[in-house]
Length: 290
Image (cartoon, rainbow, N blue to C red; front, side, top):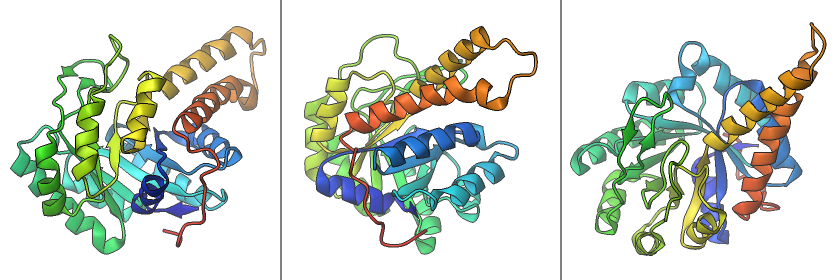
């Protein structure tokens, strides 16, 4: 059932678990994620990145998710991930996203506040939630052409930022990175504990793929309510594709045969993350459809 990020994360924060947010494209990923989440009776967040919404993506992805979400009796949010300009936020609102992330994390503090304020002013009148980022989660970009350095979130800035922006959720930087890790991370859990103590809103952790399980669970115990995941699903899809290519013998294979191991790989990752975040059997009935 389609609902908002605000409602999903409020439940997670109150009940001390986290909800996985999966960046996804096309029906193979959407179906694998939703069917697996339903089988585990878990809430889930389906996300889309600007690069995956290019061309007709802004039409296809949100319409697909909105068409199927209410078929699944679990809370589902449709979330725009890492928008850096307000035009994309406006398009997401018009196309039916139930939440947006506006990413001003690479900007100076005051500029980040202004960008986030503007996104909130656009989204809140439509009942759409807003996530922002304070500090900066670095790592490789999707094309693996550039690597950005991470800047840890300053707990002193959190209260001021949330009060000035009226944001619904805050992504923080405590040592994770986007993409595939080059070395094992060491999350700053003490820093997270300080941030959680002063944050008025649920906290989000980006760069969840490849982070050691014990560190993820420590982060959830200390305030993380949403974990972003993409690279782990892409790795699983690539492995499934290779497996399909190695076993298919027909010149004209059926789509079900082509996609079977890809979907199985995605489903395995989704189930693993749901259990890791203690989100299994946490589904509830949202207050209203979005």
